[in-house]
Amino acid sequence: MGSKYPIEVLTLGEVSKFLSAFPDTKEGRRNRTMAQVMYQTALRCDEMLSLKVGDLQLDMGCLTVQCGKGGKRRVVGIGEEVQIRLRELVRERGTHQFVFATRAGGKIDSGYVRRIFARTGKRICIGKRTHPHQCRHTAAFHFANQGIDYRIIQRQLGHANLATTDRYIAHLGDPQVIQAIRSVDWSPVEVRAIK
Image 1 (cartoon, rainbow, N blue to C red):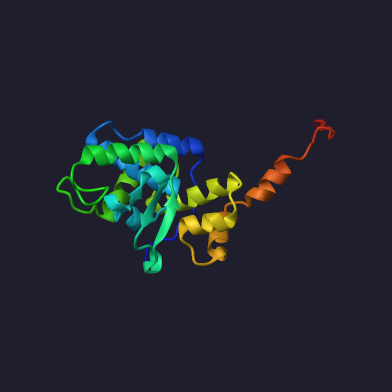
Image 2 (cartoon, one colour; image 1 turned 120 degrees about the vertical axis):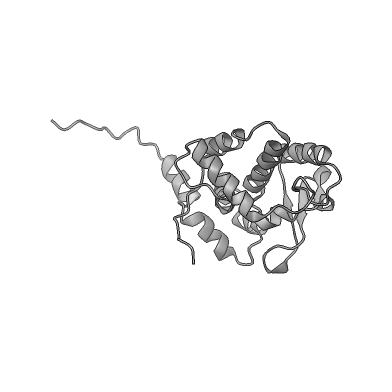
């Protein structure tokens, strides 16, 4: 059994720095798009790697996960930037079956994605362990911070139980509690230095 590390989400600035670190090559653009899809859709690594061109409904702003955890099918929303990147990737990659294909057209191995994430995170000195599953936690936390209802986040992540979604978010700090305390007007409180 592997080591258990604490979950660390990336800030929006760290996500931006991470995504900007991929080279402007065919492989680099593919890898950046993989990372961007995972960060902005909260797909599991294997769900992302199993995507086929027919699973993309870019004009509708969604994609279909044909076989999620437990063999469940679900439709997830995607943002405009991801739609643009996926269109470019599909146009550039040729006639391969998988959206994210090897040079020979086969399915990319999840170990490759883990190595890419780890190397990229170290190279840009984020100071946190970067890995594909971190994308799900980061996305869930950012969705919650944007005020998206937990039931919507639950469906996007493909969780059968809302309690699982709550665990993804609450252990990082309840966004509603944080926002409520941040909005308190502290101006009448006078702070004096102790001499």
